[in-house]
Length: 207
Ligand code: GTP
Ligand code: MG
Image (cartoon, rainbow, N blue to C red; front, side, top):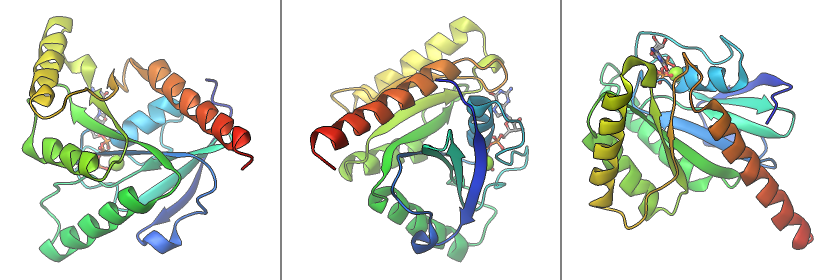
């Protein structure tokens, strides 16, 4: 897919203030600092569109970006960021849970995990929750450029084995680097396919 246009739409902390839910959207979530905002920028090739930082907790709202005037990419705050107050973390947990389980036009949630580290309970638990709530998701391994190919393969295989303990079938998996753009085309092709399928479904059902 060719990205002709990508622009910021809105930054919200309240579910009922989100943009109208009439076009497909794809959300990026994962622990703080995993590389969500960087990946969004790499996908659309616009450095600085989503705010990135080496300090965890940069993204603190639900940020919508309009792509090619036809679908949204959504940058979410990292979970598990301990520096915030307990009350704030609880508020966020509720907002995110609401967003992910109730947002009608959210076609897929991309769960980002750092390819360098072993499966974390917070990520595995979050994926379980997505499964229980029947939320379609993909797993995206980030920062692949920081590993050798053999380390990367070993870690991805270990992650798959861990997932197979809980799941009968693996979700779509992507190995990415925002530095080298590894995985960029694959993710964009996946999104394009979802958009086309939705369009077809709406057409055949006269919607
Ligand atoms: P929060 O918004 O705080 O939850 O973080 P985030 O998940 O959006 O992470 P962000 O994109 O801000 O990246 C965090 C740090 O990791 C930054 O210093 C990035 O430059 C770095 N980073 C992100 N992706 C990559 C990657 O693919 N390769 C390398 N080498 N560094 C990366
Ligand atoms: Mg961010």
